[in-house]
Image: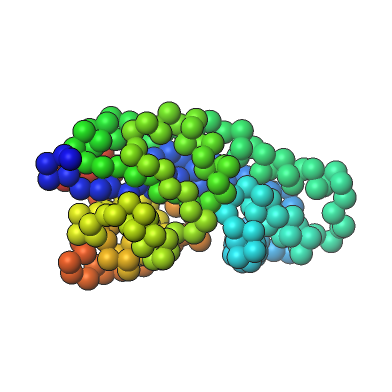
Length: 232
């Protein structure tokens, strides 16, 4: 057991590596392809966001759900029926995301190596199991973590389950991530500590006001992932 060690639960997408920026590029290409004559790109994006919320409920997160959202949005807004050729083009926007390499955010590897010598690290990510596990493998970071947890949703119940599975001390456990909705607020609700590391391209559906930490839980707001070494 490490002396004075704590447990850091660490998010993956947009905390360790780039993710949403690729979705944003695909969405921009989709909106341009749709070329709607009456609605602005912002109005189309609002509709797509609503459709994504609907698809998440029934199909979860990940590229298959995102692809369904693009198809449904096209069907809702286009004056022409969706043909096999159009269907293939729309699927192509999602495939560009899958083809992207895992691009680490600054100072991630050396920061994890530093933290791993002093604390217990557990990767906690949500989404499609095959997609997320594939990214973890390609990242080369797997061996830096004591365990990998891939959950369908990050809510208070999910964090409580992780706490129970690993027999964690809530006061010595921190969730690190860029999403108020998935990383910070539900972690605080589950009675652990949280560390908010903002990302400029955090997915709009992950936006939410930061909750206040109720003692004994604590909340840290940092400017970069590397800044963790100044606190741990």
